[in-house]
Image (tube, rainbow over all chains, first blue to last red):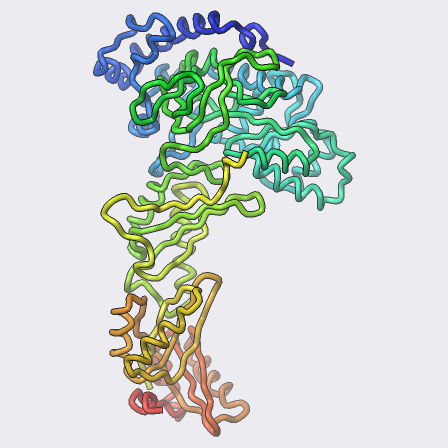
Length: 435
Length: 141
C-alpha cells in the first residue's frame, strides 16, 4: 500500500521541479528570518536569488551539529516563538542538548511522513500499534504516535520500559504492530517467550524499528524470535525524527521522503557531492520545514543513494544501509554519545586522571557501555567502600551529561595510553557491516 | 600499637599480585601479613612489610597505585572467645572497624585492625590491657 501515490511515485523530473520550488522558498525563509543562516550565506557570497533549481543547492553552505550547539537553544529558529508549538531535543556533544522547534505545519509534515512509513509496512486504520519508544524530548514516541493517529489506526501510547506490562497490554489489546528500538524488540522477544502467554494469542505481525543502527542478522533474529516482519524506520532529531525514511515491502534500501527532506551524498573531506550511487556522507536539507529548517545538514552518517525506481512502485530515492560515521559519535542503546562528552566530565573531576577509554559491545542484544578511568594519585583508598563510591560517582556524573549510565572500570595509574597526538579512546566491538 | 600498612590498588589481572610479591622480594622486603579485598574488576592488597617506606618507594617507581595506611596491630591469645572480647571493647567505645585481618601462630594470634577512629581505638584497647604490638617488633617476625 502507498499512502501518497502522487508524491511517492512521482517522476524524477517532476520531483526535481518540486524540490527546486521548495528549496527556493526555504532559503528565502532562513535568509530573511534567521541571522546565523543569513550571515553564513553572505560570507559564502550567495543570496536567495541564486537559487533557481534544486541543482543550485551546492552553492549553499553546510550546517553542522556544532551550529545547533553554538546557537542553543533557539538561535536557528526561522519562525517566531508564537508559531512554535513543540520542542524536541537530543543529546549534543558537550552536555547541552540540541533543541529543535516545530510549527503546526512542521507537525503536519511529520505526520504525513510517518503515515507513508506505516502504510508501507501494511498498516492501516483497522490496526493497533503499540508505541514503545520513549515519550518526551526524544522524537521517537510522539513521532510514531502521531503517525499512527494520522493513518487512523489505534495507538497504544505505552512508552518505554516495564516489559511485563508491555507484554500484557500487547496481548490483551491485540497490538498488530510494535514500534521500538530493535534491541528492545529482542529483549521483549525473550521476555515474551518466558511470559507464559502462547504466541498464537498475540496479534503481532509488524515491527517498526529504528533510532539505532541494526544489521540484517539482527533483523532475521527479531523476525524469527517474534514471528513478525521487521521494518526499518529512519529519522534524526535535527531533520525531523522517525519518518524521514522507511523500508517498503521489498526491503531493498530505505525510501527517503525527499519531497520534504532532500538528501545529498558528499565527500566528507572535500564537501563535493559524489557521483550518484557512490558512498559518502549523507546531507539533508529540509525543504518544507518552518520552525528550524536545516540547510545542508551534515549527518556524519556514511551511506549511498539509489535513484532507480523500486519494485514496490515508489520512485522515492532509497538510502543504502548506514555503514558507519565520519565523526566519533557512538549510538549506544539509541542514545547519541560523543567521547568529548565523557572528556568534559572526566576533566572536571579531581579524583580521576583526564584519560579514559570507552568500550562498546553488544551482549545478549543489549549494548554495553564501559569506561576505563584512572584514579588520581592520592585518591586511591585502602577501603573498598570508598573505591566503589568513587566508581558510582564517576558513573553518575557521566550519566547526568550523556543520559546513559556507563559501567565504570577503575584501572591502575598510567594504564591508559598517553600521546600528544590523536589517541584512540574508543573500541566499538559491535558489528554493523555483517550483511 | 599503630603500624604502617601498605595498600596497593590492583586490577584483576593474572600475575598482578605476583608482580608486587616479586618487586618486594627483589628489594629484600619481607611480608608479615596480607589480605586482599576484591570486587569484579579490581582488588586492594593490604600488606604489612618489614620496611614500609622502602616498599612504598619501590612500588611507586614501578608505577603502582600505593599508599601507606595507619592500622592497629594487637596480640591476643589463640583461644575461643578472645577475638570477641576485643571487639566488645571497640564496640563499647563506638569504634567502627573498616576492615581487619589476623594471623595466628601457636598460642598467640596477631590481629590487624583498621578502625575509623584511630586514637579512640588505641586508647580503648590500651585501657583494657590488650597487648598492642609496636612496629619494630612486628616487622621482626
